[in-house]
Image (cartoon, each protein chain N blue to C red):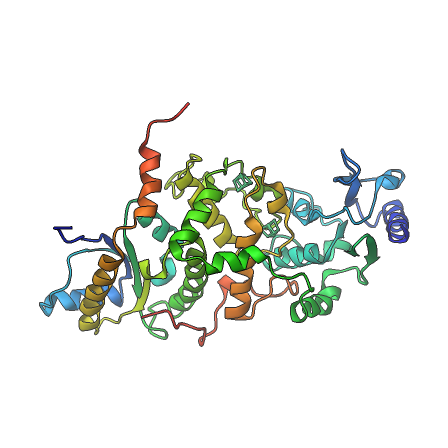
Length: 149
Length: 276
Ligand code: SF4
Ligand code: SF4
C-alpha cells in the first residue's frame, strides 16, 4: 500500500445546527479532512434511514448523520424522533454486519465549528483504518456484471 | 374440539342474528396438517370452520382489505394472542376501528386448544401485558446467539448468503398484517430507493428496509417466515428488532389499541449513548 486510502464519507446534516457549525468551521479557517460530502437537510427528523442505505448503495465507505442537540431543534422535536429511529436502525445495521463505526451520529450546534472539524478528522481517520467497505462494494459490482443465463 | 364447537355455534348465532357480516376463520387445507383461511358470510356455511393446533396463520391482515370495514358493520375473526396484538397495532395506527371487530380468541399448547376470554381488543390488554412480563418459555433461537458471536464481516457474509437466495417475490410483505401500505417503498420509483432487481444488493436493501419498517410493530406471528419460499430466517431479524425496542424503549408491540407507535413517539431522556 503505497497510497493512503481516501475514504468517501457522506454527511447528512440539518441546516440549522450542524450545517451552520460546518459554516463556522469554514469561516474560522479550520482545516479538516476533505473526505466528507455534506448534504444539507431541513432537520434530522428528515434524515430517513433510506438516505444512509442510498449512500452505501452509491459506494460510500462511511456515513455521518448530525443535527441539533436535544432541546435545540428548530422544529422543537425532530431530533428526538430521529434519535429513536437511529437507535433502532443502528442496531439493525449492526445485526446485518455493517460495523457501527461506519455509520456515525452526532449533535453539533451552530456554535461548534471546532467540534465539527475535529469530528470530521476523527471519523475520516477511523474509517481510513477500517479500509474501504469492500463487502458492500462487492455487492455493488455484482449489479454491474452482465446477466448470467 | 370443544373450543371449535363453541366458536362454530357462536359464529352461527352472530351470523343468524346479523350482528356480524362475516366470520374470518380457518378451514381444512390441501394436506391434513394445513389450514386455509375461510370467509364465512352465512350461518349455514359455519360448519366449514375448524379450530385446532394447525391453525397457526395470523389472519388479522384480512381485516384491512380495501372496503371490508368501511360499511361500519362488524366482523368476527379467529385470533391467537399475536393476532390480537396485530389488531391493536392496526387500531393504534388508525387502520381500523376495534369496535367493529369481534375476536374469537384462542391459544394452543401442543395439540390442545383453549379459548381466550374476551370479545373486544381492549379486554385482552391485561393478558397481553402478562405475555410481556412473562414471555413464554420458548427459548431464544440458538442461531441468534451464533450470529451475535460472529464478527461484523462474518455476519455480513451470513446475511449475504441468506439474501442471495431472495427472489423478491414480496410474499413476506403480502403475508404480514402490518404491511398494509397501498404503495410500498419498493414500489415507488421516483425516487427509487431500493434496487428492484433481485441481485444480492437489491435483496439486502429490501430486507433491511422491511425489517426496519416492522421494528416495534412486528408481533412475531411468523407469517412472513412461513411464506418465504426460499427459507430466509426472517424471524431472526424480526425478533432481534423486537428485543431492541423492548430493551431500549420498553416497548412491547400491540399491548392495547391506544398504544403509541414506538417510532412515532419519543421521551426526552431516551438513551443516546451512541451519539457523539
Ligand atoms: S414481520 Fe412477520 S412475524 Fe412480524 S408481524 Fe409481520 S408477518 Fe408477523
Ligand atoms: S418472501 Fe423471501 S424470497 Fe420472497 S421477497 Fe421475502 S425474503 Fe425474498
